[in-house]
Image: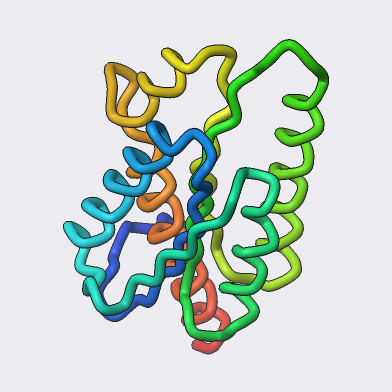
Length: 160
């Protein structure tokens, strides 16, 4: 029989760290609100959530690494918004943030919910931060909680 592991967003007893960029605050505050609401709805206690504000998206991987290595969180969320401008800066920031997120997750083993928007326009970003395209902060929270559950199931299976 095939053994299927399918993570569920179970937040009871979990401690969550959230790194959120202040740059593009109109968008990032909406992402944060969506993530917080989702975590609370899935059983994470308010007292078990730590929010760290950083200047911009480029600083997010470092803050997430500090949270993950601190040993006091079960998962980390990375929330930010990068909107394309008229220079190559967009490409460098997006690549750096994405690479940093992956390195943080793989180097620490702590699940990371990736909620960094990379959009061509501010309207697109707003649409993905609680508008008609949903709230990617919520999605990042669900992904992080589900990955904690996957990790627990795999650890239980290997121990048993």
